[in-house]
Length: 267
Length: 248
Image (cartoon, rainbow over the protein chains, first blue to last red):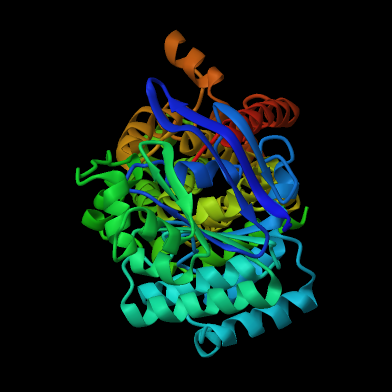
């Protein structure tokens, strides 16, 4: 019987009348790669936000590495590393400075910070570019740096919110092979979301399909394909969630990105 | 403590790396200094009020600090937008440390900007009363910086995007500057204006700075110091509270 490192029970998040996450329960065994699949606006990111302490749930219980994200925020935050759906680097600092800043915030001792930064940056192929400003990096390089940064403080859990969105297949494969290696070697549990079904099929030991705030299926990808008599996980996904296209409201951040592009500031 | 230091250093690095920003935010105070400083000089002297250039210099320095400080605080919006804010919010440090690091870093940046403005004023002919009081002037510059970085932080924590920025500039920062003793002395003003000036914490900051740089205090060094200290503590608390309420 393996240890369950993430346990979610009856989790609910309401925004006014709108129910973003509707009584979901799931558990992730330690050391496993767990995929969270669902159409746009299904509640994937909302769930990750609650697990990572930045959003308070309406009701329900969560356990991350044995701690409660609502009350033991510090312990929970020490346990995980995260790659967010959109960028979270400081563009005006260099790659190495971003790593150092992270190490500082997480209290990684200086010497360990230096050796681990070098090890991780070499692993993802950015050691030669460590002194370049992040604003000079390509999208794929930024993503790789974010993965490396998330692992700097040796977390037990890695949250990846659409880590490969907008990247070419080479970079996607590259990133995933590193994540798989790291997960295996250091027994890091990975919870990720993605829209690339073949990716989930390939790397995830187990996936949960979430739609309109509810988990509609949860199993190994092969079992889901069998259950829905589908050839691919993508077909299984559509069989489970239907053909309708989901609309997501543009957030304030999206609006501001648009403004920032118009102003041409900082980029 | 560690997190405060790290975030503070980050702000300084960013400041030092953007000479365009340093020079850019110098433009407005320098225009004010040259146009008003020399433009009103003759009239001011004829009224027997002394050297206007010397009078207005503390006001112009405060202007440099005010704009930089509010902007440093509001930078939270940019960090929210470009994502770096998230990185700090999921780190195992308290929100209070994050906010203190940001405010301290922003305040030091604002102070440095104020120092640059002051050097320009010196170059154009400001005459010091006494170098001995320079440390006092630095104390007042620091308090003004903390006060307005806190205001910026409070606003930046509430605003979701930059759309509200002109509102802040035109309805908060501009009035704070013009309804202070930055450009004119406090005596003989209409009642309403006197009240506005006395309610504005910037007035005390500029008065303190003016006194320390060699002119006379309209209030007293103690009053100025006390008002600024209380005002910046209150606003720092408000800023920290609002920042702690940010959810992503």
